[in-house]
Image (tube, rainbow, N blue to C red; front, side):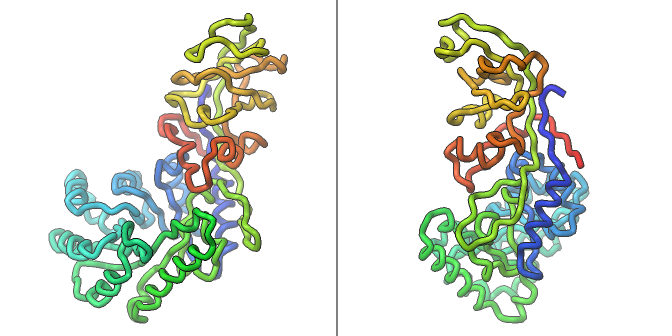
Length: 380
Protein backbone atom coordinates (compact mmCIF):
# COMPACT_ATOMS: atom_id res chain seq x y z
CA UNK A 1 0.00 0.00 0.00
CA UNK A 2 2.07 2.93 -1.31
CA UNK A 3 -0.54 5.71 -1.08
CA UNK A 4 -3.74 5.56 0.92
CA UNK A 5 -6.27 7.43 3.01
CA UNK A 6 -7.25 5.34 6.02
CA UNK A 7 -10.54 6.26 7.71
CA UNK A 8 -11.17 5.07 11.26
CA UNK A 9 -14.88 4.17 11.39
CA UNK A 10 -14.84 3.65 15.15
CA UNK A 11 -13.53 7.19 15.70
CA UNK A 12 -16.20 8.57 13.37
CA UNK A 13 -18.95 6.89 15.38
CA UNK A 14 -17.40 8.06 18.66
CA UNK A 15 -17.24 11.65 17.38
CA UNK A 16 -20.91 11.51 16.44
CA UNK A 17 -21.85 10.01 19.80
CA UNK A 18 -19.96 12.74 21.66
CA UNK A 19 -21.62 15.45 19.57
CA UNK A 20 -25.03 13.90 20.17
CA UNK A 21 -24.48 13.80 23.93
CA UNK A 22 -23.68 17.54 23.91
CA UNK A 23 -27.04 18.44 22.32
CA UNK A 24 -30.31 19.16 24.10
CA UNK A 25 -32.61 16.16 24.47
CA UNK A 26 -34.53 15.44 21.29
CA UNK A 27 -32.20 17.38 19.01
CA UNK A 28 -31.22 15.23 16.04
CA UNK A 29 -28.13 15.14 13.80
CA UNK A 30 -28.03 15.62 10.03
CA UNK A 31 -24.61 14.46 8.80
CA UNK A 32 -23.08 16.60 6.05
CA UNK A 33 -21.33 14.50 3.39
CA UNK A 34 -20.95 17.14 0.67
CA UNK A 35 -17.70 17.50 -1.23
CA UNK A 36 -16.96 13.75 -1.25
CA UNK A 37 -17.59 13.78 2.52
CA UNK A 38 -14.85 16.38 2.93
CA UNK A 39 -12.43 14.10 1.11
CA UNK A 40 -13.28 11.05 3.21
CA UNK A 41 -15.28 9.30 0.45
CA UNK A 42 -18.96 10.01 -0.22
CA UNK A 43 -20.44 6.52 -0.37
CA UNK A 44 -17.93 5.09 2.11
CA UNK A 45 -18.87 7.57 4.83
CA UNK A 46 -22.58 7.56 3.91
CA UNK A 47 -22.59 3.76 4.15
CA UNK A 48 -21.21 3.92 7.70
CA UNK A 49 -23.67 6.63 8.72
CA UNK A 50 -26.58 4.65 7.25
CA UNK A 51 -26.17 2.23 10.17
CA UNK A 52 -25.48 4.91 12.79
CA UNK A 53 -28.54 5.50 14.97
CA UNK A 54 -27.42 8.95 16.11
CA UNK A 55 -27.65 10.24 12.51
CA UNK A 56 -31.17 11.02 11.28
CA UNK A 57 -30.41 12.15 7.73
CA UNK A 58 -27.58 12.93 5.33
CA UNK A 59 -26.87 16.31 3.73
CA UNK A 60 -25.35 16.92 0.29
CA UNK A 61 -24.82 20.03 -1.77
CA UNK A 62 -25.97 18.56 -5.10
CA UNK A 63 -28.53 16.21 -6.59
CA UNK A 64 -25.73 14.17 -8.21
CA UNK A 65 -24.20 13.49 -4.78
CA UNK A 66 -27.59 12.31 -3.53
CA UNK A 67 -28.00 10.02 -6.53
CA UNK A 68 -24.59 8.43 -5.88
CA UNK A 69 -25.69 7.67 -2.32
CA UNK A 70 -29.04 6.19 -3.34
CA UNK A 71 -27.53 4.05 -6.11
CA UNK A 72 -25.08 2.66 -3.54
CA UNK A 73 -28.06 1.19 -1.66
CA UNK A 74 -27.90 3.64 1.25
CA UNK A 75 -31.35 4.27 2.68
CA UNK A 76 -31.27 7.37 4.91
CA UNK A 77 -33.10 10.48 3.77
CA UNK A 78 -30.93 13.06 2.02
CA UNK A 79 -31.33 16.82 2.23
CA UNK A 80 -29.89 18.70 -0.77
CA UNK A 81 -28.73 22.21 0.12
CA UNK A 82 -28.33 23.73 -3.35
CA UNK A 83 -31.12 25.38 -5.32
CA UNK A 84 -31.75 22.92 -8.16
CA UNK A 85 -33.95 23.84 -11.15
CA UNK A 86 -36.75 21.34 -11.67
CA UNK A 87 -35.63 20.92 -15.32
CA UNK A 88 -32.30 19.60 -14.04
CA UNK A 89 -34.08 17.27 -11.62
CA UNK A 90 -36.25 15.86 -14.42
CA UNK A 91 -33.19 15.37 -16.61
CA UNK A 92 -31.41 13.37 -13.91
CA UNK A 93 -34.49 11.31 -13.10
CA UNK A 94 -34.82 10.23 -16.74
CA UNK A 95 -31.43 8.54 -16.43
CA UNK A 96 -32.73 6.21 -13.71
CA UNK A 97 -36.34 5.38 -14.64
CA UNK A 98 -36.37 2.16 -12.62
CA UNK A 99 -35.74 3.94 -9.29
CA UNK A 100 -37.52 7.29 -9.74
CA UNK A 101 -40.02 6.57 -6.96
CA UNK A 102 -37.20 5.51 -4.64
CA UNK A 103 -35.27 8.72 -5.39
CA UNK A 104 -38.24 11.03 -4.84
CA UNK A 105 -39.13 9.24 -1.62
CA UNK A 106 -35.61 9.56 -0.21
CA UNK A 107 -34.53 13.03 -1.33
CA UNK A 108 -35.49 16.33 0.30
CA UNK A 109 -35.04 19.35 -1.96
CA UNK A 110 -34.35 22.86 -0.69
CA UNK A 111 -36.81 25.61 -1.61
CA UNK A 112 -34.82 28.83 -2.04
CA UNK A 113 -37.50 31.10 -3.50
CA UNK A 114 -41.24 31.62 -3.44
CA UNK A 115 -41.56 30.45 -7.06
CA UNK A 116 -40.08 27.10 -6.03
CA UNK A 117 -43.42 26.30 -4.40
CA UNK A 118 -45.06 26.23 -7.81
CA UNK A 119 -42.12 24.57 -9.59
CA UNK A 120 -41.84 21.69 -7.12
CA UNK A 121 -45.60 21.25 -6.97
CA UNK A 122 -45.67 21.04 -10.78
CA UNK A 123 -42.88 18.46 -10.69
CA UNK A 124 -44.87 16.40 -8.20
CA UNK A 125 -48.00 16.60 -10.33
CA UNK A 126 -46.08 15.47 -13.43
CA UNK A 127 -44.64 12.53 -11.50
CA UNK A 128 -47.87 11.82 -9.55
CA UNK A 129 -45.71 11.83 -6.46
CA UNK A 130 -45.28 14.17 -3.52
CA UNK A 131 -42.01 16.11 -3.49
CA UNK A 132 -40.23 16.41 -0.14
CA UNK A 133 -39.07 19.96 0.56
CA UNK A 134 -37.33 21.98 3.26
CA UNK A 135 -37.74 25.74 3.06
CA UNK A 136 -34.46 27.64 3.25
CA UNK A 137 -34.79 31.01 4.99
CA UNK A 138 -32.52 34.03 4.64
CA UNK A 139 -34.16 36.79 6.70
CA UNK A 140 -31.07 39.03 6.48
CA UNK A 141 -30.59 39.39 2.72
CA UNK A 142 -32.97 37.03 0.91
CA UNK A 143 -30.08 36.08 -1.39
CA UNK A 144 -29.60 32.46 -0.26
CA UNK A 145 -33.16 31.63 0.68
CA UNK A 146 -36.59 33.12 1.26
CA UNK A 147 -36.77 36.59 2.80
CA UNK A 148 -39.25 37.09 5.61
CA UNK A 149 -42.03 38.55 3.45
CA UNK A 150 -41.97 35.61 1.05
CA UNK A 151 -41.96 33.12 3.91
CA UNK A 152 -45.08 34.72 5.39
CA UNK A 153 -46.80 34.49 2.00
CA UNK A 154 -45.69 30.87 1.57
CA UNK A 155 -47.05 29.93 5.01
CA UNK A 156 -50.49 31.16 4.04
CA UNK A 157 -50.51 28.98 0.92
CA UNK A 158 -48.59 25.85 1.87
CA UNK A 159 -51.59 23.63 2.44
CA UNK A 160 -52.97 24.41 -1.02
CA UNK A 161 -50.11 22.64 -2.78
CA UNK A 162 -51.26 19.04 -3.18
CA UNK A 163 -47.95 17.59 -4.36
CA UNK A 164 -45.62 19.09 -1.76
CA UNK A 165 -44.53 17.63 1.55
CA UNK A 166 -42.91 20.61 3.27
CA UNK A 167 -41.31 18.78 6.15
CA UNK A 168 -38.75 21.32 7.36
CA UNK A 169 -37.44 24.87 7.56
CA UNK A 170 -33.80 25.83 7.92
CA UNK A 171 -31.30 28.65 7.67
CA UNK A 172 -27.59 29.34 7.90
CA UNK A 173 -26.02 32.18 9.86
CA UNK A 174 -23.16 33.50 7.76
CA UNK A 175 -22.57 36.18 10.38
CA UNK A 176 -21.25 33.47 12.69
CA UNK A 177 -18.02 33.48 10.67
CA UNK A 178 -17.20 37.08 11.61
CA UNK A 179 -16.42 38.48 15.02
CA UNK A 180 -19.62 40.44 15.58
CA UNK A 181 -21.68 38.94 18.43
CA UNK A 182 -24.39 41.60 18.10
CA UNK A 183 -24.94 40.78 14.42
CA UNK A 184 -24.94 37.08 15.18
CA UNK A 185 -27.58 37.51 17.87
CA UNK A 186 -29.70 39.74 15.60
CA UNK A 187 -29.62 37.21 12.76
CA UNK A 188 -30.53 34.34 15.07
CA UNK A 189 -33.41 36.39 16.46
CA UNK A 190 -34.63 37.27 12.94
CA UNK A 191 -34.71 33.59 12.03
CA UNK A 192 -36.51 32.70 15.26
CA UNK A 193 -39.15 35.39 14.73
CA UNK A 194 -40.10 33.72 11.44
CA UNK A 195 -40.21 30.27 13.01
CA UNK A 196 -42.59 31.57 15.66
CA UNK A 197 -45.03 32.49 12.87
CA UNK A 198 -45.53 28.86 11.85
CA UNK A 199 -48.97 27.67 13.02
CA UNK A 200 -48.85 24.89 15.57
CA UNK A 201 -50.51 22.40 13.23
CA UNK A 202 -47.70 22.92 10.69
CA UNK A 203 -44.87 23.29 13.17
CA UNK A 204 -45.52 19.83 14.61
CA UNK A 205 -44.89 18.34 11.14
CA UNK A 206 -41.72 20.30 10.46
CA UNK A 207 -38.06 19.80 11.34
CA UNK A 208 -36.43 23.16 12.06
CA UNK A 209 -32.64 23.51 11.91
CA UNK A 210 -30.35 26.51 11.92
CA UNK A 211 -26.89 25.60 13.16
CA UNK A 212 -24.01 23.70 11.65
CA UNK A 213 -20.78 22.41 13.18
CA UNK A 214 -19.25 25.81 13.90
CA UNK A 215 -22.40 27.35 15.33
CA UNK A 216 -24.43 25.17 17.65
CA UNK A 217 -22.21 25.49 20.71
CA UNK A 218 -22.58 29.29 20.68
CA UNK A 219 -26.35 29.55 21.18
CA UNK A 220 -27.69 26.23 22.41
CA UNK A 221 -31.15 27.72 22.88
CA UNK A 222 -31.55 27.86 19.09
CA UNK A 223 -30.66 24.29 18.20
CA UNK A 224 -34.36 23.62 17.50
CA UNK A 225 -35.02 20.07 16.22
CA UNK A 226 -31.77 19.26 14.43
CA UNK A 227 -28.24 20.48 13.69
CA UNK A 228 -26.19 19.89 10.55
CA UNK A 229 -22.84 18.40 11.50
CA UNK A 230 -20.07 18.48 8.91
CA UNK A 231 -16.43 19.19 9.67
CA UNK A 232 -16.83 18.53 13.39
CA UNK A 233 -17.91 14.96 12.67
CA UNK A 234 -14.62 14.35 10.86
CA UNK A 235 -12.58 15.68 13.76
CA UNK A 236 -12.08 19.26 12.56
CA UNK A 237 -12.85 21.90 15.14
CA UNK A 238 -12.07 25.48 15.94
CA UNK A 239 -10.71 26.67 19.26
CA UNK A 240 -13.57 26.78 21.78
CA UNK A 241 -15.09 30.17 22.47
CA UNK A 242 -15.34 31.31 26.09
CA UNK A 243 -18.35 29.89 27.91
CA UNK A 244 -19.04 27.32 25.19
CA UNK A 245 -18.54 23.57 25.08
CA UNK A 246 -16.88 21.88 22.12
CA UNK A 247 -17.53 18.14 22.06
CA UNK A 248 -14.53 15.83 22.28
CA UNK A 249 -13.71 14.90 18.67
CA UNK A 250 -10.59 13.47 17.04
CA UNK A 251 -9.26 13.22 13.48
CA UNK A 252 -10.60 10.13 11.74
CA UNK A 253 -8.36 10.08 8.66
CA UNK A 254 -4.70 9.25 8.13
CA UNK A 255 -3.13 10.02 4.75
CA UNK A 256 -0.01 8.06 3.92
CA UNK A 257 2.61 8.00 1.21
CA UNK A 258 6.00 6.36 0.90
CA UNK A 259 9.67 7.35 0.73
CA UNK A 260 10.61 6.37 -2.80
CA UNK A 261 14.27 7.38 -2.61
CA UNK A 262 16.75 9.29 -0.47
CA UNK A 263 19.62 11.26 -1.93
CA UNK A 264 22.53 13.38 -0.73
CA UNK A 265 22.84 16.71 -2.54
CA UNK A 266 25.61 18.91 -3.81
CA UNK A 267 25.37 22.63 -3.05
CA UNK A 268 23.72 24.49 -5.93
CA UNK A 269 22.27 21.33 -7.47
CA UNK A 270 19.07 21.70 -9.49
CA UNK A 271 16.28 19.61 -7.93
CA UNK A 272 12.92 20.51 -9.52
CA UNK A 273 10.80 23.23 -11.12
CA UNK A 274 11.72 25.64 -8.36
CA UNK A 275 15.39 25.57 -9.28
CA UNK A 276 18.36 24.88 -7.02
CA UNK A 277 18.30 23.35 -3.58
CA UNK A 278 18.01 25.68 -0.60
CA UNK A 279 21.12 26.53 1.41
CA UNK A 280 21.75 24.03 4.19
CA UNK A 281 19.79 21.16 2.64
CA UNK A 282 22.21 18.26 2.37
CA UNK A 283 19.87 15.30 1.97
CA UNK A 284 16.34 14.90 0.62
CA UNK A 285 13.66 12.22 0.41
CA UNK A 286 11.40 11.78 -2.62
CA UNK A 287 7.86 11.16 -1.36
CA UNK A 288 4.98 9.50 -3.24
CA UNK A 289 1.57 11.09 -2.78
CA UNK A 290 -0.70 9.33 -5.25
CA UNK A 291 -2.52 11.07 -8.11
CA UNK A 292 -3.14 14.31 -6.28
CA UNK A 293 -2.11 16.92 -8.84
CA UNK A 294 -0.44 19.19 -6.28
CA UNK A 295 -2.66 18.90 -3.20
CA UNK A 296 -3.48 22.04 -1.28
CA UNK A 297 -1.77 20.57 1.76
CA UNK A 298 1.66 20.86 0.25
CA UNK A 299 1.26 24.28 -1.35
CA UNK A 300 0.34 26.11 1.86
CA UNK A 301 2.92 27.78 4.08
CA UNK A 302 5.54 25.63 5.82
CA UNK A 303 4.23 22.20 4.74
CA UNK A 304 5.63 19.17 6.56
CA UNK A 305 5.54 15.38 6.23
CA UNK A 306 5.92 12.91 9.09
CA UNK A 307 8.56 10.18 8.68
CA UNK A 308 9.62 7.96 11.60
CA UNK A 309 8.09 10.48 14.00
CA UNK A 310 10.05 13.41 12.53
CA UNK A 311 8.38 16.42 10.94
CA UNK A 312 10.26 16.89 7.67
CA UNK A 313 9.96 20.18 5.83
CA UNK A 314 8.70 20.03 2.22
CA UNK A 315 11.06 21.86 -0.13
CA UNK A 316 10.81 22.88 -3.75
CA UNK A 317 7.57 22.47 -5.68
CA UNK A 318 5.29 19.42 -5.42
CA UNK A 319 5.25 17.81 -8.86
CA UNK A 320 2.19 15.80 -9.92
CA UNK A 321 2.29 12.83 -7.54
CA UNK A 322 5.50 13.44 -5.61
CA UNK A 323 7.43 16.00 -3.60
CA UNK A 324 10.79 16.41 -1.86
CA UNK A 325 11.41 16.96 1.82
CA UNK A 326 14.51 17.91 3.78
CA UNK A 327 15.91 15.01 5.82
CA UNK A 328 19.37 16.52 6.42
CA UNK A 329 19.04 16.11 10.20
CA UNK A 330 17.48 12.63 10.20
CA UNK A 331 19.93 9.84 9.44
CA UNK A 332 17.43 7.10 10.27
CA UNK A 333 15.12 7.84 7.33
CA UNK A 334 15.47 5.43 4.42
CA UNK A 335 13.82 4.20 1.25
CA UNK A 336 10.38 2.52 1.70
CA UNK A 337 9.67 4.31 4.99
CA UNK A 338 6.07 5.33 5.53
CA UNK A 339 5.40 9.06 4.96
CA UNK A 340 2.41 10.62 6.75
CA UNK A 341 0.72 13.78 5.51
CA UNK A 342 -2.26 13.88 7.87
CA UNK A 343 -2.79 12.04 11.17
CA UNK A 344 -3.38 12.64 14.87
CA UNK A 345 0.35 13.33 15.34
CA UNK A 346 1.07 16.85 16.59
CA UNK A 347 1.95 18.99 13.61
CA UNK A 348 -0.03 16.81 11.20
CA UNK A 349 -3.50 17.18 12.70
CA UNK A 350 -6.42 18.86 10.98
CA UNK A 351 -6.18 21.93 13.15
CA UNK A 352 -2.42 22.18 12.53
CA UNK A 353 -2.97 22.18 8.78
CA UNK A 354 -5.78 24.72 9.08
CA UNK A 355 -3.45 27.10 10.93
CA UNK A 356 -0.58 26.38 8.57
CA UNK A 357 -2.70 27.05 5.50
CA UNK A 358 -4.23 30.30 6.83
CA UNK A 359 -7.66 28.77 6.26
CA UNK A 360 -10.34 29.25 8.84
CA UNK A 361 -12.57 26.57 10.29
CA UNK A 362 -15.31 27.14 7.73
CA UNK A 363 -13.04 26.74 4.69
CA UNK A 364 -11.07 23.69 5.77
CA UNK A 365 -12.73 21.60 3.05
CA UNK A 366 -10.24 23.18 0.64
CA UNK A 367 -7.56 21.02 2.23
CA UNK A 368 -9.16 17.99 0.60
CA UNK A 369 -9.37 19.19 -2.99
CA UNK A 370 -8.19 16.34 -5.19
CA UNK A 371 -8.80 13.63 -2.59
CA UNK A 372 -11.38 11.76 -4.68
CA UNK A 373 -8.64 9.99 -6.64
CA UNK A 374 -6.75 8.46 -3.74
CA UNK A 375 -7.58 4.97 -2.49
CA UNK A 376 -9.55 4.92 0.76
CA UNK A 377 -9.67 2.14 3.31
CA UNK A 378 -12.31 2.03 6.06
CA UNK A 379 -11.18 0.29 9.23
CA UNK A 380 -12.66 -0.23 12.69
